[in-house]
View 1 (tube, rainbow, N blue to C red):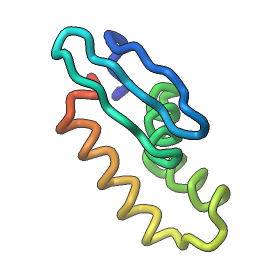
View 2 (cartoon, helix red, strand yellow; view 1 turned 90 degrees about the vertical axis):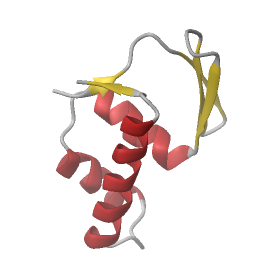
View 3 (cartoon, rainbow, N blue to C red; view 1 turned 180 degrees about the vertical axis):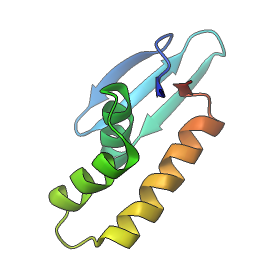
Length: 85
């Protein structure tokens, strides 16, 4: 199971999200789509469920494009340490 790292403080800014990692003294900014991905990860949603939600929210985005974008976002969240396993 993968979920957002719980040691961060977050604050919405409009549709976007600001995440503060107090331990590393870093601040991250997620746009609205990355915020949706991060929140769905926290709700224990699978990658396919996240992709489906992105496609439903953005009818102009097809499944292959959403899949590529979601996988890229998840990889970036991992690289930044914003998810824990």
